[in-house]
Length: 105
Image 1 (cartoon, helix red, strand yellow):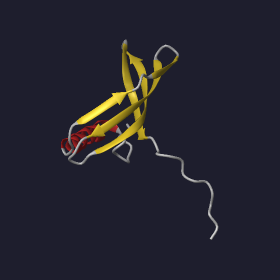
Image 2 (cartoon, rainbow, N blue to C red):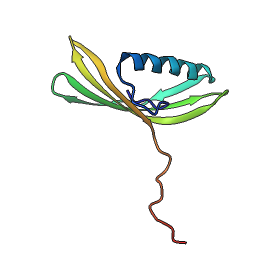
Image 3 (cartoon, helix red, strand yellow):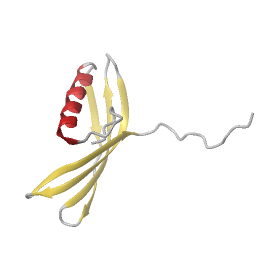
Image 4 (tube, rainbow, N blue to C red):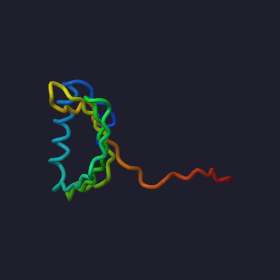
């Protein structure tokens, strides 16, 4: 798992559990959360693998207000007849494009 509020890759059950614990703490330190999820774009790879891509726009109210728009990609596999997320990747959408000109003094 790559998460928008965590810079490091989350691997394995222990790291995932720690991430969920820390994520609950940061959520509880903020005000009310509202969010909107776009319609996903889903591509099938064969019969048992799918890639879902979508946007999530979020806003936390005070205290500790923050907001942003996140790009999300989920990789799913059909395991024993059920679709399971096997990888989740999210990142904040950059605001604007950094300049490409190198100003001369």
